Image (cartoon, rainbow, N blue to C red):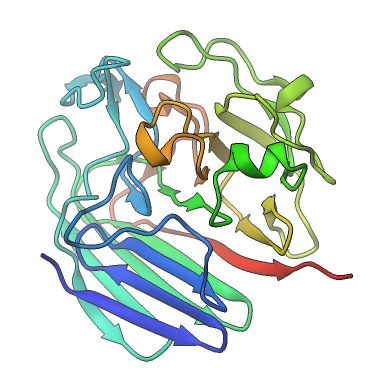
Length: 307
């Protein structure tokens, strides 16, 4: 079991796992804002996990980069893909920690199918504006490295989505103007298309109803601070996730394929720098030259209902 760091600031509390630099829990006034887990049970369905050096799927676990073909382990047999990177089960080292902030670092030496060393840093900070997560990557190798990053929190209102929807007490909104069509293995097909029907979640949002989401969205509207938002609203408050510059994609997953109490209980809102299968398509794929660094921020907070 890895070390856990407990953070606090005002009405917010968080738990950060040294294993995978994962977000075990985030609360506001004792309300869970994300689906929590503990070190004993471990994360399910990638809840709270940092996804690097790629988010989402690589079709067939194969890709070519600068003329060389690579093969990754297919660890998502349902879709025949390599999924969500290589660092979520790694032991990260603490750099510094305080009451409201912790920074973890991983010297990633590469792995079969991805022989590109990286230094990864994850900084979690609580404030009156909720949780901010900054992920930095530095190419410590001697060759260019393909790179993408994402995060996998499940936003929650403490009650199943279908229960809230049946009561007319659920609203989902997203600042995405386009969605990405996929094949039966959730691999992108063609170009993104304007959102319509159940995929149109533009503000002020809508009840999720029976819409099934395991969908990548892009063409994100941004506020004056450059943030794109996903909001999950209930009768008492909203849970809001923002994605900063560089996060050009949002994956929304309504947890329909999860069993038991997790089935349609929470909404995964995943900021991603690139879409599924970017190692093959090259879409928004970052190529880090030796010594090059990139840093991306996102955050989660609560918004009380007014009136």
